[in-house]
Every structure is written in C-alpha cells, then in structure tokens.
Length: 303
Image 1: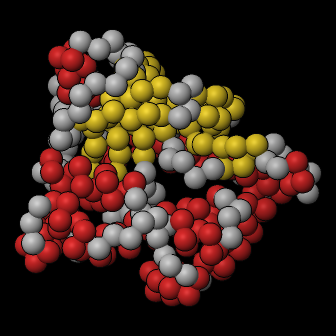
Image 2: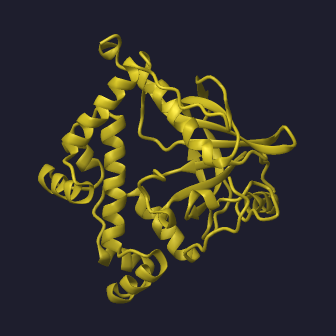
C-alpha cells in the first residue's frame, strides 16, 4: 500500500450510516428512513448526503446492490431471482431491468460469460505472475474466528498508507484506542476490502482497517468491533510493489476456478500486511492475500 496522504473521509456520523446501509441491502431502504436515522428532514438529508458522499442516497444504495449482485452472480450458484432478492430487489423483473441499465447486460448473460471464462481458465490455466514481484504457490488455509477492532477507509485503495508509519491514520489509531481501552491486541494489520477496484469509483472504495483484539470494547462513531467468522480461504503471499497486487488476486482466483474441491463464496477478500521484505537495496511490501472459498458440493466435483 502506498505511503501517501489519505483521502478526505465523510464525517463520523455519515461513516456509521454508510456502514449501516452496507449491512442491510436486503431490506427496504428509503430516503425517509435514512433521514430519520440521521435525525433531519428528507430534504436536508438528501443535500447533506450528496455533499458528503458524492451520490444521491438512491444512486448510492442501488450501486451497492448491483455491485454486490454481480459479484454473487459470478461466484455463487444462487439463482438470478435469489441474487436479486438477496440484495434488496422485490422481483426478477425489477432486478433484471436495473441490472441491465447499469451494466448493459442481463444478469443471465453476465453469469454465462463468467462461467465461460472460468471454464476456459480451468482448461488452460494462465499464469498472472510477473517479474516485478514474488508470489508463493496458492494454498488453502482456515482463518479462525476473531474479534477485530476496525476503522473504515473510504477512497482509492491505492491511497491507503503503509500500516504503522507516520502517515498511517488507520492502524495507528486502532492501536492507540486498544491501549486506551486496555484490551489485549495483536499488532497485525488486516484489511477487509468490499469493492472491486476495477468497477467501483475510486472515491467510493470501502476498506476496513483492522487489528485483532481479545474481546469487544466500547465503540466510537468511527471505531467499531467486528465479529470475524473465519472460514476457508485460498491464499497467496505477495512480495512487491502495490501496483502488482492485482496479479496476486488473479492468481488465487484462477487457482480456485480450476479447483476440483473448492469454489468462491461471496464474503469479502482479506489482506494481512506483513513486515516489509528487503529485495536488493530496498524494502518492498509483503502481503498475504486471501479469497474466501467453500467446499464444492460432491455432485459438482469432476463434472
């Protein structure tokens, strides 16, 4: 991650509201309900939301729903209707209409194209490795459930600073708060990434910077506790510049597509930041990249 100045974040009250929206996309979300939660009139809230977020509340909610929908279509076997319902659409027709308007293709077409790509990769595995970085072999690991102390970063992923540097206003702040609350913690910087950087506008990309803590503590408007469920992940070690990290994600995804035992699940990917490694005369980032997987149903194996 680049050691550069972080982007401007929405104020604390809006940050908490946006996280709340993310957690209830399957429910009815109206301008009136959001304004009531925020504590002002719908007219005033609409103006404040656009100023803080850069989108209208309706456009913001619809974009999150559709971006989550396309991810579910590509990585799960849920029916198109179930995907639409899971992200808050009332029926197949409204989901398909909104999806095609936003992406230019129907949900069924996008799913078929995704499956065709996966089949082609499985038949002819492609290497995404490059000379600018080192990547380990892909392996499958289980991450244990844990309590995480989190702070939200909204903005270009590439503007997230190196953890625990002078420029870091994320993980350093979490450590200070854990010390303040006198809760045991591990100085392990974790990033949970909710958006596809090739799809979501840079200024709207969402990441939770986290550290593991022993138990939940009192939350603030910006710092919260997250119960991480753990589970199985496809994992790769990446050592190199941040602009080659996409190769690591593609390599893991390609391996999962070709796997006879595992398939993707729709939880967000994770990065665990390790101490920088010395390569030649300079230190470079060392990142463990995790993509969530689950066991394939027995009927799908060798099919």
